[in-house]
Length: 399
Image (cartoon, rainbow, N blue to C red):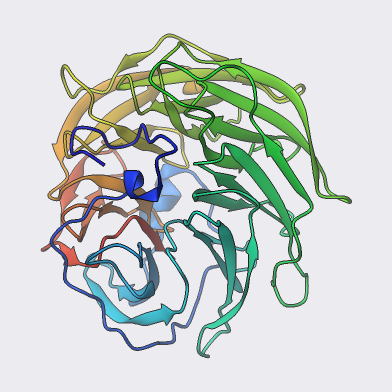
């Protein structure tokens, strides 16, 4: 891919998705991470401030294994309450694990295999034991770049970017292993947006109501809403939301109320506040607004929203910054506060620590992960310590 384009990837191949930075590797030996993922604290800001972070919590890193300078599998690490990351090993033999998701019970990790012949892989995470790859299943498409676990823990949902379709796999309740695909739905309409060669499914997630699954397609500027048959594992479309032509919607993030959601539009460098009707699963996009990065395209990647619904953060890959918004009107409005340098190059993915005291940014091109402390009252971000070197980090998952 040319350096001028970052995310409007066409069907010319997986290399169009990948940027190579200067990297230093995680240790290449397989390691074990003891997991403690239960977080039963309430979501209010005062309770977030009262919770005490635990030392040496586990962290996982997604990467590309077929890219020069990339990793050899899923990176394993720990981080302390101050945000200092230490490498502990690698779950080897997982091909191009560019996006990661954890099962609700914390026992299984899932990764996409972002290749022409796309796959999804399950990894067992026994407490106190070594991680174990349980197997890989075909997604039926090309270049899967996102996946999520349905809240019931019985179904894995994945989005194939290059082929523009979404897949469903069953999850074995006893082991967390994946079964054969039960559905594959292609976004064959509407027509592609300006500069696109076809549909490009970029994300699939379950709405807070638990009854609807939404798929964001960058190629045809559409968000699809489906119902998932939890017995058969089949998707049935119930509505579509059209973005303006050329918006390039990439990732959708819900407000905790479930009545609003926020879209990061990769191509036209905007964010959009959307209303959401849980009864029918209908998404209604509002007016595009600024990312605070100035003229040109900064390839917005993803928004995070705090559990109390007070603040939102946007990763700007071209601008190498994080935009901070105040969330107002019960989620109906985003008010731009400022942009903060991310301290790395091309922030592809953001994640909070479970207590939301820390925000992690995976910087793909610089081969680093930067960590920020989050002020619960103001939402302000302060970078902590030195960036952690990692091979082409494209996803960070702190537990």
